[in-house]
Length: 140
Ligand SMILES: [Zn+2]
Image (cartoon, rainbow, N blue to C red):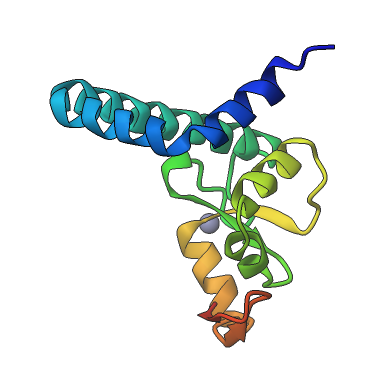
């Protein structure tokens, strides 16, 4: 059967030089159109991401497990084992983490406010220099 998705992917790949040149020219000739587009896309992504965070907060009880603080603007995900760097150092790691929290699959994460999260990290000496699986040095 004709696979339109595959056909279009191949078409775009084969004609990428011509299509990129056309897109560049279009962008140069219509800058206003693209500025508007970029802005609205960024806004859309921010809103979408925040919505996902709010769902993850709700899945974890919507308040700080340590002090009961309940303003979502200052919520942070506390990795009980101090391995939060794993979730933020890989591509899509943060998104996957949020999805897993919403699905109830992350018992190693609790909801804390920014203060309690920082206190937890200091108490457990989690500020160490580590190497992630890409070989990059990170300070966690
Ligand atoms: Zn707190």
